[in-house]
Image 1 (cartoon, rainbow, N blue to C red):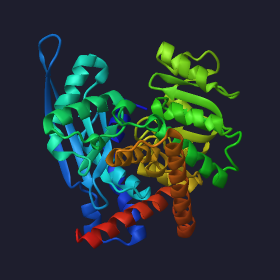
Image 2: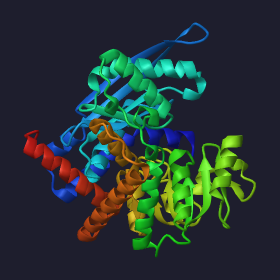
Image 3: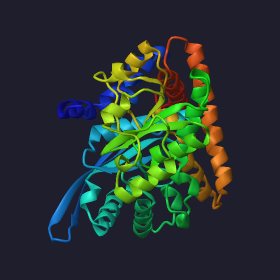
Image 4: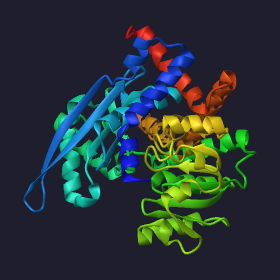
Length: 422
């Protein structure tokens, strides 16, 4: 993909989500004024963060927090650190969180945050300072009953530990439920680390049984091998699938005979990339996406499948591990080609279900056992898939995304109506 194409696609994630919203609006017969209010966040906070680097120079960063819709409850969504973060991207992702929380019947609205920064260029001390300053600017707008952030791209339990420590120092409130994805020492759950991957694998298994004859022996390619991709691979392998291709930001590898997931995880940890896996064929990310397989799981960044490569996809089914990996144009191509796409608001919702369990435990002052939490995530994901498949079957001429969004948007609209918001 050329740099110009990538820039165009990345810059319009918000436009892509609005297109999808208006498509579902037609299905539900929603009036223009309701669609307009659903397409806009309730609040967007932009902050400037200044830290002093080791060289004594002041480094300035811009960050955002978008609070999209609170009809169903407090805002909920991650915070990402990435050099390409934009306000529009954060707004789009907060909108997607609204639909995701609604679809999974969670008592949340949608939120999302981000700081435009390359964390790889900062020291650990600078990252901690950046994280604490971010909370300094936002603490009035977050809380366990207001807005509950979590990890996202390039953030992790350590980031959440800095967040909660700073929040307690500033507010004087030991409200550990304000953040999820925390270390277990601070009320986090062990399941949170792998809950998104578990959810993706669970939904892939359910979808495989409906569309491709089952998960046993299914050939899977996973684009993106971070937390989500690696855990998805492990769970799918345990379910009987064959992982034949994976990639990270440096490239990928394909082996039709199957990839040893533990070995490739070890390779990535030792060498920094999956491309150093000793067997198989080395490929680019673009080549990996268009390679033949039964299930393709894009689990990296948004808009990787678009109108320029959608007709080259050779998978029998796509499961969105990342947020927004298919553009609206790509959705239509897949629908016309008869390739089912399990949408992000369903497929990768295991993470927010895990966050919900952690939040509820923190609010009640109890700690749920790991196996019990794991069963709850699997059960909630299976039920959500069955609801979406039921709507898909009922609509007849729509894809899975429209079925999922129809359920999610309708629930939000109904909540807004009974609250008198519209």
